[in-house]
Image (cartoon, rainbow, N blue to C red; front, side, top):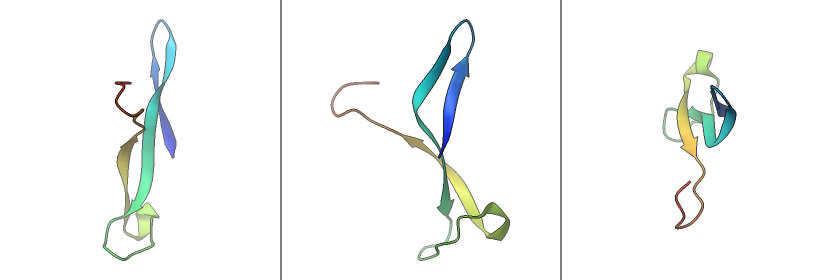
Length: 50
């Protein structure tokens, strides 16, 4: 997972990141040069907004 960091007057690490995924169902290949891809991943904290 690659984290998302917001940088400005302060630096904030947001609850989530960019994950590598297999793009074809049943595939285990996540390498982008061999057909894998990426998707945003967010970490939620129950009923509380992050």
